[in-house]
Image (cartoon, rainbow, N blue to C red; front, side, top):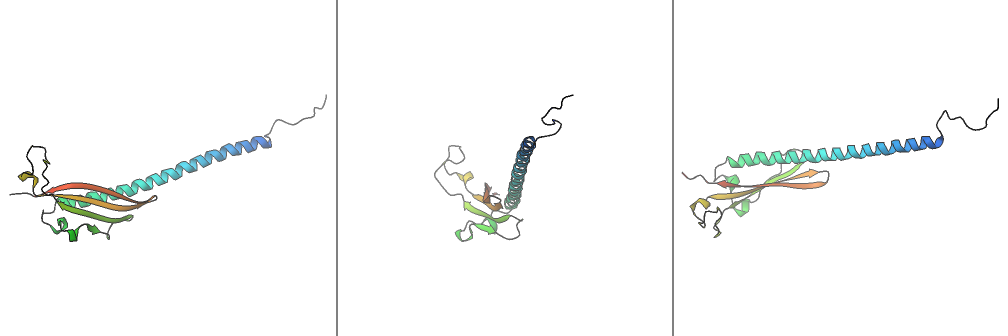
Length: 151
């Protein structure tokens, strides 16, 4: 029997081990990036959900107030109305500006009559909330019209 010089092929070489570790490292880094992006996205979604809820709550409150309530005052000295305390974590401020619908010489409701009776007694309310996210401060807004109920 002849003895053959060479190497035993039963194990891994150093090069094969390094390549395997490199592939594993790339996979772990990809997972890390995916998890980090997912956490940032969830945080942003939570902040937006909280701000939307704050806006919806205030919207419902303002809808049910009487037309002449002080929170719906159109006076420049009281606009914008602002709340900065008692808000959920991450929400910096909630504010709303109330503007009386004025005569504008335009057929606003599309019935071919300009500034008729049904266009009076309206207030435009613009609600805004400023909140924090990982990317910085964001603003979420909604606008609606409040009508005076004539009896």
